[in-house]
View 1 (tube, rainbow, N blue to C red):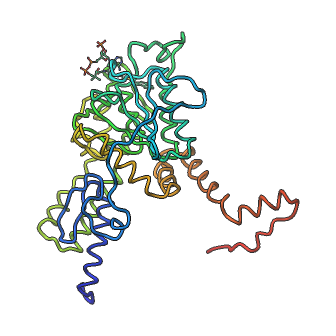
View 2 (cartoon, protein in one colour):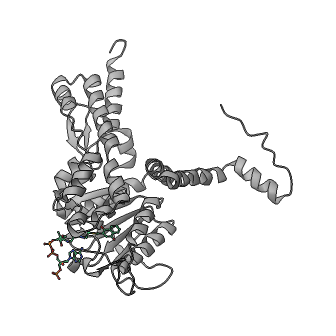
Length: 373
Ligand SMILES: CC(C)(COP(=O)(O)OP(=O)(O)OC[C@H]1O[C@@H](n2cnc3c(N)ncnc32)[C@H](O)[C@@H]1OP(=O)(O)O)[C@@H](O)C(=O)NCCC(=O)NCCSC(=O)c1cc(O)c2ccccc2c1O
């Protein structure tokens, strides 16, 4: 590029490599224009950020059982918190039923998610299923009646819908850690989570139409919208690599073969009309999951992602979650991001002046605050 020194070019190269690494999960372009696998993290990268922050540790934390305010025991789930770290783990514990949920399971999950939300030492929540055969196989069909799922009551419920909304609105990242089947209502649960880390034995799909059910709420809408944005970003990064690094051979072929595969409306219809199952790598290509790792590395990798998120500004992460959900969640989405704006405004001098004036029975003096262009 005209007028640029070798040094300028190296700086741009390094910065672009770093940005590309943030935008393309799991890989990064090095100074030498080589792509290296990050496995979701920072290993081997020599830039200022990584020198300051160091590697993200991947050891499994010490888990301690957690309770909520009710003091009631959990029967269908296991609720744990990592000792000394801001990570909570919520596990559906019905492996003999492939972690199918019943109303009781959902009630307990809602209690645990609520507790993790309220606990300000917790910054990220892992949602998973016991064992390696299933994350969750959806509603317990043996309890399905004419009004929904009934366990201890003589009427049915579809209370998993409330859980979906709760996860979506929870102002902290929720990561689905999926081994084995995530199908039916279990598939919808992983989709409403913010991120999904899948083991290589994971299987995804909707089963509703096979068993006379469907989830026409988030189950349909979120799936149809999944990951179009990510694929666009991947394309932009590859294009920039091609333009800036003049990496003609890899660049041209890469750009031309960028896969725009994503769930999108056509795939969403396929998944719902056909009710087929998809393996982990197919799900990754469709943008249904963030990364696929060997089963034995699943928890390690998930913990690494949690720790990497925990290094970042909680308020920025919170705003990113509400901003990404806002458009799809309509008024509820606007309310969430609007509430975040109020939360931030309360922390300002201008907001505080209004409250103080009211409490001190005087007119507020807003004249000192700028009316910014
Ligand atoms: C998940 C499977 C593909 C696993 O197959 P696999 O061969 O590995 O295991 P088995 O089939 O032998 O299962 C072992 C054991 O678990 C029982 N089990 C598994 N899943 C369920 C289940 N969902 N409900 C009840 N029981 C289950 C199974 O019967 C076996 O028990 P044994 O006693 O015989 O050992 C496969 O199991 C499978 O396809 N499961 C069913 C998946 C399914 O159709 N789920 C329901 C979809 S509908 C739904 O989830 C749903 C729930 C909601 O709350 C909604 C609310 C609002 C709108 C829509 C909703 C909705 O659609």
